Length: 377
Image 1: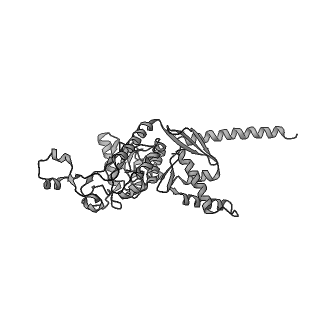
Image 2: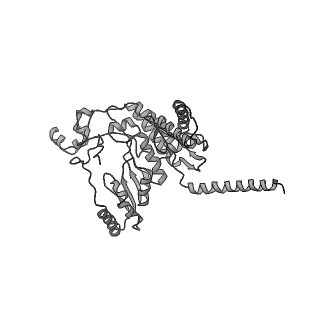
């Protein structure tokens, strides 16, 4: 973990950042042997991060093993939905993706290698495939500002149907071997061994410094009043989660959304226009306004080769206005100029589709009978 993007606050693997992975055949035999020997199917995998090669090697073997495993795994938060589904099929039920924050600027300060919209996509897609997500919200990074948190706080009511942070937001601790420890120029100096060491060891300060792994520093980043607003929003999210719902069902010619969230007064919403259904499908992945408008125009030109669509600025204006409206309805999350929709696919979408098709078939049969009755003999 951290070979490509070493989180600035993380001190794990201080002796070597080179990625190491166990042979998948050996790993498989160890898991199966543990299940047999101890008659236990619930296991926490203590790897720092999932080896992505396991998606094609280890996990298919676990799926076919015949054991009803329930595994916990740490993963990257930029995994795609089909990859998450592979985890579920192999018995993974609980993941820790290291989300840490929902703002792209703060994530860049951490050197996370992901955006806020990608993290929200992870929460949404995990809900779609049935994964429970454990994650923490962190603050206290040099260079962060109140605005980096206020917009996320304002949008949290739209996310209350997704797994909330496990606890209130925590100010980061400085760990030995982390970039913040090794490079004071990143914003932390005057490091002192954390207070708890003084209750355990009666040692001079210099020896304590050499011994300690966690260090106290003067607070950086956002002020306490911003932290209070953030934690109030997280608490509300945690309390509302169990009773909140937002799903979508895609029937081809329309997309039906069902919502039960305290901050929004609508229950069922249908998207029926070709442009808005196409835009919603695009926002399965994060897009900027310009990128979404460009792809919508390209789709229009393919559908009608002789058409002359309006200027880019007109298409972008329509997309921007639609996204503004959707944000007010809690359909999308906005961060860093990107948008992503926040509605997991309905878990009973196939049943809904069958019901929808039956209703359509009945309506078409009625229309046909009426036409036959009105036809001349």
